[in-house]
Image (cartoon, rainbow, N blue to C red; front, top):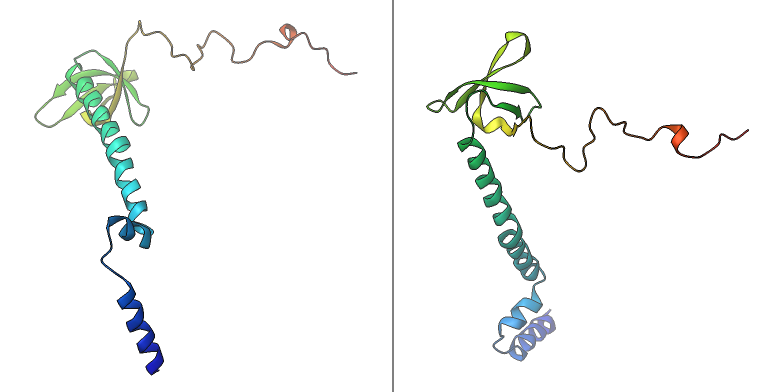
Length: 139
């Protein structure tokens, strides 16, 4: 038991004042935490800021009779906007009305808006007809 205390005391004497590199090398959690902080600062914060600016621009451009889509996928026409309560009343089909928060509106649908690149139109089939492939069925 006495020998173990002597060995620990000798190890402490060997260690001198360490620098920042020695501190980083001795604890593996410190470099991981530094990488996490850099990731958050360089990736997450700018994405959050950009998303918040897009949402503010969407809310600023919202007006009566706009066709909108909510986060739940409900599509309706803006009947009225209540800025004091942060609410929008949507008119749905069959003269149904729905009150929703302005923050749930994800996009304004324009009639002239071209379809997105990945989206397919209802008139065009998703897959080409079998006769256009040039393949013959196996017999």
